[in-house]
Image (cartoon, rainbow, N blue to C red; front, side, top):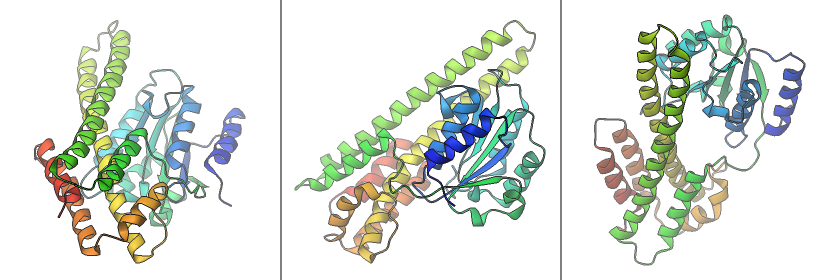
Amino acid sequence: MAFSSDAAFELLRRAYAQDRLAHAYLLAGPRGSGKRRLAANLAGLVTGSEAGLEHPDVHTAEPESKSRRLRIEQTRALEKELQMRSLMGKRKVAIVFEADRMTAEAANGFLKTLEEPPNHSLLLLTSDQPESLPDTILSRCITVPLQGEGVEELTAGQRELLDGVVALFKERDRGVATVYRLVRTFSTLLHAARERITEENEAGLKGEEAHYRQTTESDWLDEREDYYKALTESRYIRERSLLAETLIAWWADLLRQQQGAAGLDLAGYAAQTGALAKTLPTHDALKRLTALEEMRENLGRNIKEDLAIEAGFLRAFGAE
């Protein structure tokens, strides 16, 4: 039996209230089933905070490289964080998003943590393809099956970006200036994300400085400064990847509609992608999708960010 995200949270909330919450759960369901929201709600529940995924005792990992794989370095970083003392005196939470994207090495490494979880920790894995996970991982998690809710989980930034795409294709004269408006939207969202992430991580570091100022562990504090710098960059790359993937999903949906395929990633924009699918040749849509995929790869290389974005957008959204 599959549950809605809200129903699953209520069941787990009761288990938590009765001190029966397990140490590891696999939140499994199709795209749009509320896996990320449920993970954030559970993290907030056990840390006693509304901060959810942004709480300093909540640590996450998800595919970031151009291959969209979860590497062993990421799972090792989670394991290290779990071994450290809770900053707020409650549970520590580790969340592996898209766990089926773990490399074999990462999965084998994380298996040890599932077998011997640190005290007062909660491990959450999410996947829309749980059948791809090794049996050794599945057997050590309680699976929470989630049903599709028919709505995609979009952030305000994703919606702003997609609305910009919709507005662009409504323009009769779609020249370079029109495309650059969309570039500015994308860049503004990235800038706001970096500022938010930097501010949140600086606040986290200050909280640790207040605690460790009274100790002799100055070397440890230096390590935490390096950690927060790396965390800021990692979270920023994740935000950038999310926005790029949103644009890729737009063109993928358009191609699905041209082929009459079911299962749109952005069901809320089905009318817009469907209308454009009727007027745009398939080879053209494929070329534009490829441009964004190449942009995503270039952003993962040592290429200047703004140049990679401009080139990708001009090819993906410019007029023929």
